[in-house]
Length: 301
Image (cartoon, rainbow, N blue to C red):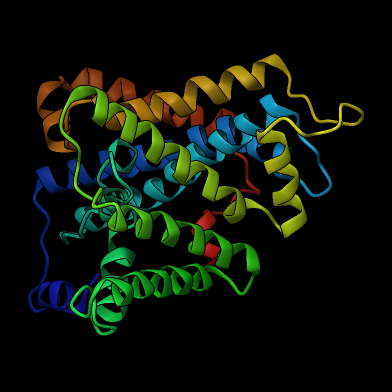
């Protein structure tokens, strides 16, 4: 959070209300559920198998692994920030939302307005605008976009895979700006087509983000287009294929089609026994499915 938004909250002793504490606790548990159950227990095994060094996945495995990681990184990172926001609320503090249903975006520009909002706005305010933003002509605007996204990729790690991930996202944003397509399209068919295109672009770019090295990324890309040799190719079990498809596309569809539902609304619409039962199921799933070796993905950055 920006200091101007957080430091004023430290000027007086914080005394959380009962509602703040309750809503914060619900958000905390929901965040852990996203991380421990959805990201780690359901999606991580699929992504880890496909992106392991030396593995050459077949087409089905490559697509399942790519989309499994797309779902995993959201549930891991959004789960982390939801838990942090929940803990802060239990102490009487208010933290900004960091994700706004990013997989419901119909353009790449919209996606980056919804994904990791704290970093996206920081890059905009402290890199893109000082470089001139869009005030210095088209060519300079395109160069500024590429520079910001390349630096954003490098911020994640001193690796060519992160640089390529940032560059590919910069290319998507630049092409979108050059084609005057950064605004959300009108019409159901156009919106649906652009939504699918945006999700595909985001997922494919993340192959570089997830891969440990360039060769691993190339192996996955070969699988995506069906060029993996049949001998020695990784083929996922049917259960893992089904898990990757159902869980990931449930997450993506929820971003696109589910109504906005805050924790406050959820608590107001459900009785205490229902909420208590849901919390109990979450804690049981933590005990049964927790993998102690899984840190938050963004702890490494």
